[in-house]
Length: 380
Image (cartoon, rainbow, N blue to C red; front, side):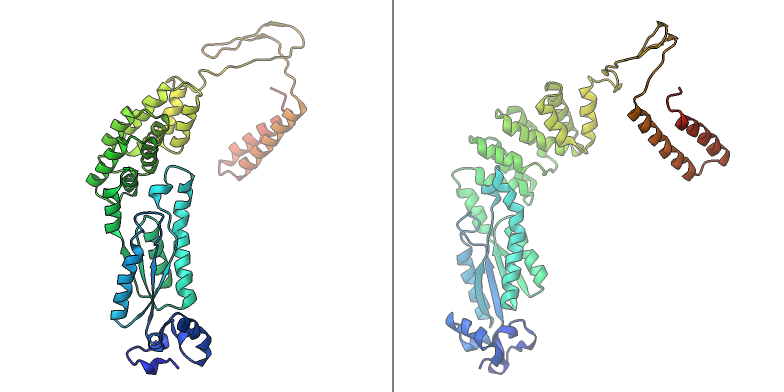
């Protein structure tokens, strides 16, 4: 029967794997290991999970299964028992530029959850993780932090680089720029290649990926690309990037304002730019432009004056820019719901006066006027 005594090098009394390998009550658990060719001696050793995100979905993962074999040999050489398993991955290079990108960030959580569940469920003592994409690497490390067991994470960097160099279409390289993990010079190369790609989908994928990206020097590349781009969808994606980053770059703000001014008032393009700029200082600039540069927000307001008159009136006038004189008698009749609304607001005003810290005499005078108005809201 496997137990600690068989291999004195390892005391499993405090290792998680004791729950599936030690004692007569764990015989059913051990039978599953035996069915996979694991020996009794191997069960006395620490059990190390070797997890990869291997699949045929992306070049960054294609070599991970072979690398896992090397990792397993390393585990064996140090006296451990490796158990290999895999999990999913979503690569941004293929998911980008369409609805598939909605799956990207979610995949990170699925990776972390699935690795954690596998290690906990099988009581592994340690973990080696191999990954090669933007979400699989942090997903593995998130699982390692949750598990709090001895862990090692390895990146399949060589396979990523080889895939980028060998790709017949440049689109597989462009997603790297959006990750902002490379140097500015490396990102410059990616953006220059992407901007000149003949495939519209490749250029769009890069433009979308750059939305939340900014570093010193990127503005010259983007502005050059923006001025020469012919596809409107790509132009809109670049404009989205510039508006989002406008608070960091004055030249972006100037280009965005120029584009806004070119569009017609109330156009779909202007509304889209306003949506991008929501919450940014640029939004106020857009709103000012929408009023033809005037600081008077009421300049273009049309006021309609409808007056019901009982009796005679000599003259009536309404002026937005000068003086207005009304001579005669004008009686205004309010609808009942209007009177009710006025009284409700006056009641709120009374409560506010009572709770204010103003001088008591001033409060009393204010209350007197408000109560008088509340008694007859139509008395002007």
